[in-house]
Image 1 (cartoon, helix red, strand yellow):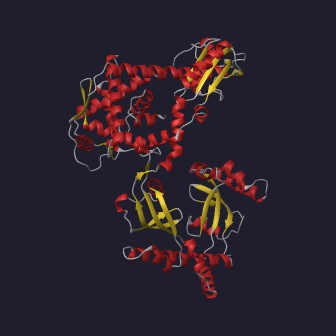
Image 2 (tube, helix red, strand yellow):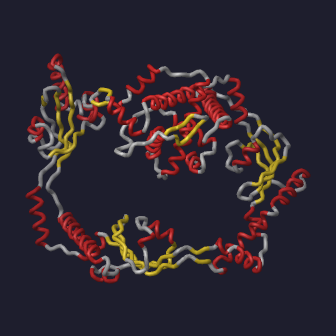
Image 3 (tube, helix red, strand yellow):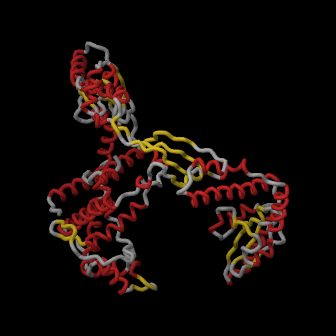
Amino acid sequence: MSALSNIRNGLTSSGSSIIVGIIIFGLVATFGGFLGEGSVLSNNSILTINGKSISQGEFAIEFSRIEEQLSQGDQELSNDVIERIVKESIVLKELYSQSAVKAGLNMDDKKLNSLIRNDPSFYNDDTFDIDLFRGFLSRLGMTPDSFKEYVKSRYLAGDLQTILSKDINFSNDYIRQFIEANNQTRDITFAKVLLTEEAMKENISEEEVSQYYENNKFLYISPLKFSYKLLNVNQDLFNNLVSVSEEEIKEEKEAFLNNFVSQKRISHIEITYENSNREEKLDLAQNILLNLNNDPLNFETAVSEYSTDLSTKNNKGDLGFTDGSIFPDEFENEIKKLELNQISSVIDLSTSFHILKITEKTDSSFSREDIIDKITFVKTAEKLDDVLNYLDENIFITDIETLAKEFSLSYENINDEPEDEFFIKFDSLDFDEIEEGSLLGPLESDEGYNIVQIDKITDQGFKSLDQVNKEIEKELKTLKASKKINSLVENLENKLINEDTDFTKYSEIKRNNFLLPSEVSQKLFSFETKENEIFSLILDDGDAYIVKLDKINQNKGVISSEDLDQGKDYLTTVYQDIIRESFINELRKSSSIN
C-alpha cells in the first residue's frame, strides 16, 4: 500500500507519519495571495495540541501549501482528505516544535523578523510592503505576534528534524557483517498446500448451494443496466458522402499559389562583442566565414565551437522559419539573397556578429491529392457542423433514427450495459439527467462526438440461482477446504519431522528469491530461524508453506568498497527512519491532541 493510501485510510501508519512529516518541514516559501478575495477568517481555535491552540489562519496557510503540493501529482483528492492530511501535518509540526523548545532550541526575534521581511510575497516594487503584510494577516484573522509564532514553530520543527536526520557513523566491520548476513543463502526442504487445489477436491450438493443462495441473496445483486442507441459522428464518416469537382480543385490551386509565401529556415553562429574587443571578434567571425566557404569547417561544428548563443548552441544554431518579416532587417535583407545551404556574409547587430545559413526552404509544390484532401477536410467539417447544429436545434423533438436517416448515418444498439461500464464510457453524464426516451449529446469522445438515446433502464435486482450457481459452488468449496488447511499443515509437519515422504528440496536460496512468497522468505532469513528448524505459514490467500531450514550458507564473495558505501547508505537511511518513527510514536503517546 502506498504512503498516500495510508494517509487516505486514516493517517495511522508510521509510513504515513513519515511522509506527512516530510511534507511539513519544507521551508516557509511564499504566503501571499492564496486566499484570493475571500472573507476574513476568525482566529477561533480548530485544534489543540498539548494546550497549544491552532487557529483557523494557520490551518488556512497549511491547507493552501499542502493542496498545492498534492495538486502536482496525478491523483485528485477531495477537500476532506486534504483536510485530514493538513491536520496531521500541523500536529506533527507542533509536536516537533514543542520538543525542540524542550531540547533548548530557540530562534531570536531578530532572525525571526528577518525571515518574514525577506519573504518575497510581501514585496512590492522590491520593497517590503507593510500594508500588503497587514492585509495578509487580516484575511487570515492573525496578529503579527501569532504569525511570528507560527513561523517560529515551523523553523524550530525543521531544526529538530535536521538533528534527527544526521548521519550515523557505522564501522566498516559492522557494515561488512551486515552485508555478509544479507548475502547468506539457505538450503531448504519444503511443501506447499494450495487452497485452490484443495478446494477442487471438495464436493458440494445442490441443496448446500441453494441454501447458501437463499441466506445470502444480498451478495448477488445485478447492477443497474442501460439499453440505448449510440451514434458516433466524426469527419471521417462523411469522406464518402462528399465529392470534389475539377472546378473546385482548379480554384483551390489558384488560391494557394496566389497566397503562397515561401519560408526559409535559418541557423546562425553568434559572436558577441564589446567596444573594447570589437575588432578582435570581427576578425574571428571573418576567419570562421573563410573556413566555412573553403570547406575545412562545417557549419554545425562552427556553431558548437564558436557560437555564444546558448539557446541555440546545442541545436545546430537553429532559429526556425521566416517569411521575411520575423527577424531584424539586417537578417532579412541578407536572407533574401540566399538559397538553400548558402551562407551569408558577416552581419553586425551592434553588439554581436552573425553568420547565417539557409537549412530548409518551403516551395509551392502542392499535389492534386493534397488539394483534394484539403477540400474534403473542409467539406466534411461542414457536414459535421451541420449534424451538431441540427441536433442542437432539435434535441427535444428528434430521435436517433431520424437523425441518422437525415444525414445517411448508421447507429448501434447496446443492450443491458452495466451502470459502471456506461458511466466509464460517458463520464460527462450525470445520473439525474438520464431517463428512458431521453436523447443525450453531443458528448465529446476520442473518436468525435457521441449521441445517446436511452431506450430502457433496468433496475437493480437479485441475480437468479442459475446465474450464480457456479460462483457459489466455488465459494463453498473454498470455504470447506480452508477449514482443513490447519490439519493438512500439521500432518505435513509431522511427515517432515519423520522424513517419511518425499518433499521438494532447494539449495542456495537467496533472500530476494522469486521461488517463495515474501512472507516465507522473511521468516526463512530471520535471525530467529535456526538450522534444522521447521516452521509453517498460512498466507492471506489461504495457501500454506511448510519449511525446514536444512543449512545456512555463509557469504563467500569479496566485499568491495562500493558494497561498503552502499551498505552504509542503506543502514543510515533505515536507522534514521527507525529513530524518526520511534520519536513520533513516543510524542503521540505523551501528547494531548483535541
